[in-house]
Length: 255
Image (cartoon, rainbow, N blue to C red):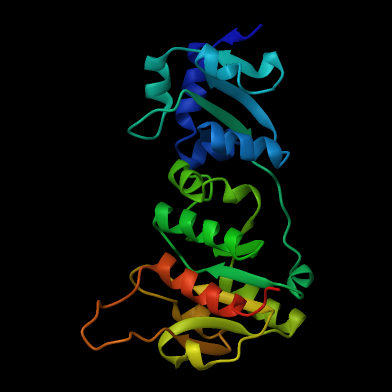
């Protein structure tokens, strides 16, 4: 039999919209059936499943983890304008980064990307293109921000995210793997005219300032995404640029 959601648990769940309390409780929120199903499929540990009674019945989980509530409470708990009928508090997984494990793959690095929607979309893009690891600067937005989680559409369960001192990581990455670090710059080489390797690391920069000078010093190959006419927007959205770059690295490698 499901339990009734207490005020104390409502308080904990509400606090998870703030990074400090996510870290304190070791949990983050996911909303909606699709992402909850992705979490279960990935073997991540659900600490609390909260929802309307009929919604809880749709998820195969131990009843002692299920907590019933009403629509009004779901609206208070939701981080979005339209509340789902179900949400889950999920244990934050502990992952360790080993640079040597990246030597036979394509890796993404994020230099202070701030917008949750952009970050979530980049994670989704990496999942689509088979990039399993993203290394973020410590100034980047938090993976477990509810808006990041929602924007990934469940891709965060398949892509490993790490937060590191990015310039130091890139320096060590080059020494250990011997692979190139790529970044997009206005003075870079036309990406469409390059022969790109199967393995390496792609750096995407901040929405407004691009790649920082400290990170730029570790870039070994600069790329440029050229516009196709003179009368164009000033720049591409960072997630759009990430999709173009990933596509060029992966183009012709399937089949």
